[in-house]
Structures are given as C-alpha cells and as structure tokens.
Length: 439
Figure 1: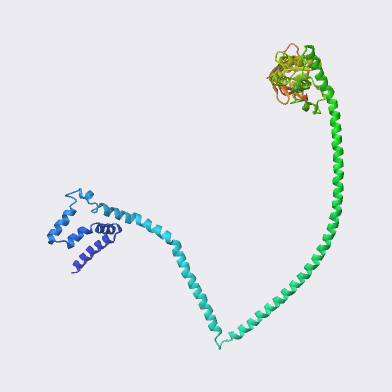
Figure 2: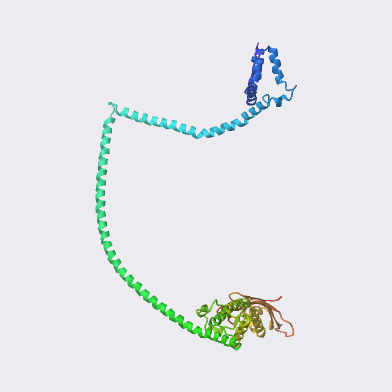
C-alpha cells in the first residue's frame, strides 16, 4: 500500500506543479474560456457518451484537419494570444494602475494616520483631565497655583508694555519737536540757498552770453582771416574764366573752390578754422580725383543753367588747374604726386640714407653707400595720401673701392597729410619702416 501511496503522491505532485505553473495554468484557463462550448457539448450535450466524445474529437482533430487551426481561432490561436497578454501585458497594466492609484492610496493612508494621531491627542487630553480630577491627587492645587502665576505674569507684562508705550510716546513727541525746529531752520536755509542759487544762475547766464559774444567775435575774426584767401582764389578763377569770355555766378565760383579742396559747400570752407593763409603756405600739393571733380563740376554747371557748348567740366577743370599752378600749388592726381616724390627721392638719396632704419642696417655692413634705387609699389588716398616705396641701396666696400659692397633692401611710406580741407596736402614725410642687409 505504501508503494501505491508513493506512486499516487508522485503523480498528483507532478500534476499540481504543472497546473500551478503560470504559463500552463494561464493557457489551460484561456483554452477553457475560449472552448467552453466544446466542453459543454462534451459534458452536457445530447446523445450517448460515445457520441459526445466522437463529436468533441472531431472538433479537436487538428492532425487530421490542419486547417482547423486557422478556421477555428478559438482552438489554439486565441488561447495563445490571451496567455501571452496575461504573462507579458497584464503585469505592465497592473503596474500602471498601481502607479495611478499611488497618490490616492497614500492620501488615504495619510488620512487614516492623521485620524489615529488626533485620536491619540484627544485620548492624551482625556487622560490628563481624568488624572487632574482625581481628588486623591494634588494636581488641582498645583494647577490653580500655576494659573495664578500665569495671570500675574500677564499683568506684569501688560504693565511693562503700557509703560513702554508711554515712554515711546513721550520720546516721539520730543523727536517731533526737534524735527519741527530743524524743519524751520532748513526752510530758512533753503530760502537763503534758493536766493543764492538764483543769483548764481543769473550770473552764469550773463557769463554765458558774454562767452557766446566773445566766441562770435572770435569766429568773425577767423572768418575775416579766411575770407581774403578764399576770395583771392575765387577772383583768380573768375579772371581766368573771363579771359575766355566765360562768366559764372558767385555761388558757382565758391562751389568750385570748395570742391577743389574737398568741402561739401562753401559754407563749410568758410567755417573751417584751418583754412587760412598760414596753412596755405604749408600746402604743396592739391590732390584731385577726376571722377569726384567731374560730378561736382557737372552739378555746378547744372545749377548755373548754361549750355554745354558755352561751358563744360573740362573747361572748368583746365582753368582751375591753371589757377592753382599760377598760385604755386601742384594740382595733381595721386599718381602724379607719387612721381614727384619719386623724382625728389632719386635726386636726394640722402633723405633715404639718413633714415634711422637705414642707418641701423648700414651699421651692420662694411659698405660705403652711394647709390639708391627706389620703386613705387602702391598709391592710396584715404584720409591721407600714402605712397608705398620699395628699393635698395648699394655701394663699394669700405676698405676696397673696387669691390662691390653689401646691398640693403628697404620698405617705406611717403605720406602727405591734409592742411587745407581734404585735398590740400602738405610736403611728404618719409618713414622707412623696414631695412635689412642682403645676404
């Protein structure tokens, strides 16, 4: 019998472990739910047991009719899908639901805890009252004594507070009186200061008017000093045009002179303190840009209202050039000014040899320099006219005049700065910024 019991326990144990397995159990339940009609026919259908078993077997004969798997999805496909959802999807749904309910569960728990805390506090107060009401205990006497002390302390604090308020009120009154006295003093001082300030403002206005008058007088003096020079230029241009029986208005003459020196109009020329006889002596070159002057002269001719047969830009340009040359100015383009500088440097090589950078390079050689070659590398006019130069210096050896010495290469800039308007330029200043012996 023991052997049969062991065999039975082994069989039932295996069956129990299989049934409780989550996959098998889920599949069995899913299959039973999907095929309840087949099970109902098997257990409670009409006919004999053999007939019901035969009918159930026919509905389950997958091996004989494989199409049943597709035709009857309740047979295997739907149970497998439900089993997969139960195992893989439902746990996530359960977690999501728990997450949604988390705050509500916590609030419910907090409410329960707060109710318990309130119950505990009330129970604590009840226990105190019961203990105090016990006639055998001396809590009543102590409590009355404690209440009396609290009342005495309250009265004492009230007295101190009343006294503090009274002191504070008296102090505030004194401060208010002091402030009133100070305010009166301030009003008196302010009135006096206001009177002094008004006197000062009136004096400053008088001084300002005097200063403006002196500035006006000074500007008038400067203008009177500038006008003879500008008037002389206008008179010379008018005389030159008159020789060819050409007459233009005073505004036209003044605008021509303003254009030559780079001013927007004659008013700007007159109000430029630098346009005077003293600076005219410093002016060596007058730079001209043919495009710029052509536009300005065309505009002047258009304002004169004369025909191009009578006067044109070329005629005005020729007369302006002739007048400037007669007055001792070199009225030239940027390239022509650069050529003049080039000729001057070639004729006076000492200007280059005396430059500090060249002297420093000469000290590194044993050469007596007697020849300089210069080239113009670029000509730029922005705020100043800059002529970039490159060249070299050569000579003979110091100890043997028949031996060629060591050459020096150099780079520099000859710069002409404006002294009359924008285009009236001073004599050039040479700066050699790079010089080194050739090895």
